[in-house]
Amino acid sequence: MLSLRKKLVKQRAGYKATLKEQKRVYSKKQYKLIFEIQEKVIREFNKQIEKLEKEMQEIILKNKQLKLNFYLLNSIKGVGEKTAITMLIFTDNFTKFESSRKFASYCGIAPFPHISGSSVRGKNKVSHLANKSIKSILNMCAINAIQYNPEIKAFYERRIKKGKNKMSTINIIRNKLISRMFAIIKRKTPYVDTMKFAA
Image 1: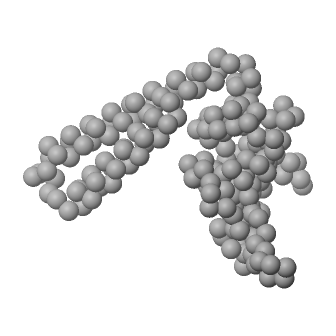
Image 2: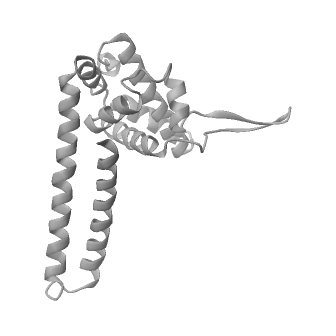
Image 3: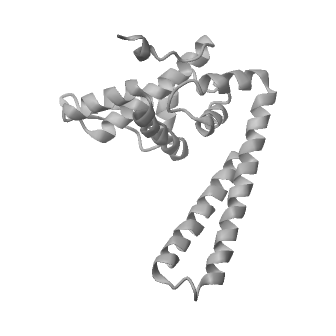
């Protein structure tokens, strides 16, 4: 179902991009029918994508362990329902990977030291052999966390003020989020935002 959803989202994006470009170039009066048909197709994509999402959520809510982990993941600011569902699927309900580090490696976001020979050392790099689908979702998570999670936002702004690279900072945030996901699943308690208690 997740795979089908991904295909439908990609196809919908194609229609949306084409329609946007056509509306920019062509007259609404002359292309009225063409616009209407494509808008109808996009609405149908929306309907079918929503149907798949609802079914996946229902499957999760019917299973005690999946339901608990879904709830726990949603306690982290920046992790929404779609990300929680994706994490449950790719980790096989957090049974497939021994640690957050191994999952981060699978996603291609775990930094590795760049060493050549015995003396040449460069900046840490991430692997290009990665699951780009989950990597992209985690990227959106990090961006959402920067916007809506005060702790993550403060961390991001501190690093940027120090002149640190934006993408490397976002990658650190992606790793932080993965670490938190694995931690709360392991201890079976929701994430607690300690920043709100600091005064």
